[in-house]
Length: 85
Image (cartoon, rainbow, N blue to C red; front, side):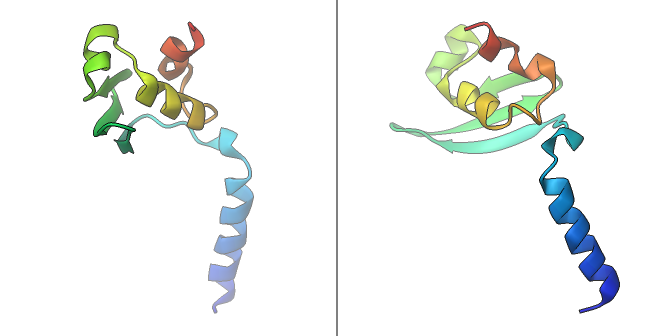
């Protein structure tokens, strides 16, 4: 393996241990819920989920799970509905 590639792999491993270096500005996910699968998006500072609950409350357990999973990588405004609980 080339030494320059080895250096990049080592650097990537160091970066992976510092999640504060990354802030997600968008996210798209397929969420496999207990009753159905849902599509979740975070774009332009807003969440969206295809579940019925989200349509009434602008948040849901699927969004809150992603907020918790990516807490350190999401901007503060992406966590607001989760932090209000």
